Length: 187
Image (cartoon, rainbow, N blue to C red; front, top):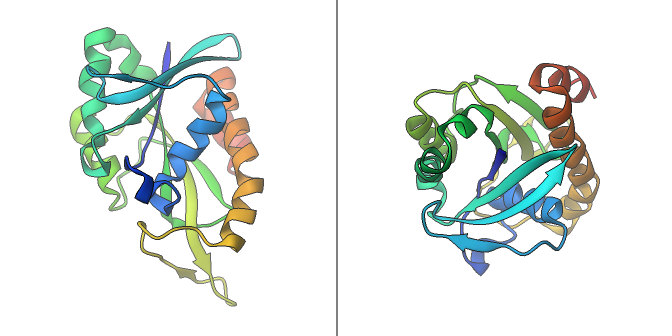
């Protein structure tokens, strides 16, 4: 089973924030499957199939800065699953509309990723980074408050980004992160 961890914060007030874009991708992947709370994983979970593989979707309920706690539960279920984790999260250093697959990369100041790295014991795992920053006329990034909501223009952009995110996840699972990175990151 392949665990996919979407980073975000629980609660209605965070639902449409930039920090919760990872959860929005997982909600699309879940495609009307039921989410249930798992006390050992401290997460909402949902099991789906992608490319013939069983996939465990996880939305940690610990708030962003403690997202790594979900890994303790995964270790209890099956320590081998840790080697297959995929983390889906917002990326302030990418423009909205941009996604990147990364592996063995630093946290870039993202507290959710810092927490995952601590509980994982390193950074040797795959991430799907989803851009949340606006760009100016000269292409410079304007970094927003990660707890701010997306505006209508941003949400229109995200409608086109989400299918790309799903494709990227499918490619990671079916082709592996190196091939998926080569195909997705060049677009």
